[in-house]
Image 1 (cartoon, one colour):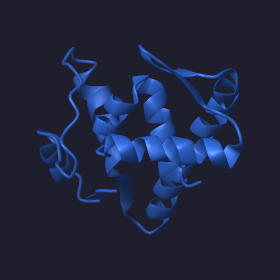
Image 2 (cartoon, helix red, strand yellow):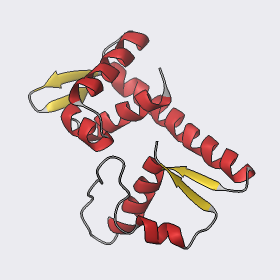
Image 3 (cartoon, one colour):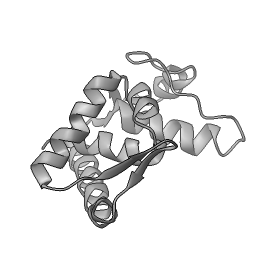
Length: 139
């Protein structure tokens, strides 16, 4: 199990659809299904029930969800703190996008639109330009 697998698990929970979660992260649908199956095999129980309407967390998936969230959040905080110690604030691309869109655009009533994989969204480079101690990286 790795952090990217847990991040994808959280995305699948949010989207309630493996295809949409895969598109959002930039994975193929088969790759995304493989991640979920690998996680389920490693932890020893199904995380989701697959229905016509999409993915539904199993009761065990519900129990494990808060731990996955804490692990992913702790990883993000670890990266930020380690970067701050080095004198440069490095945010993962996914975290920067999340903060930028959720805190700025969504609060202003704009629809949330994910950029294509490997592409910075409009406005992010201007946002970054005024902050010399912030470095962006694509994960």
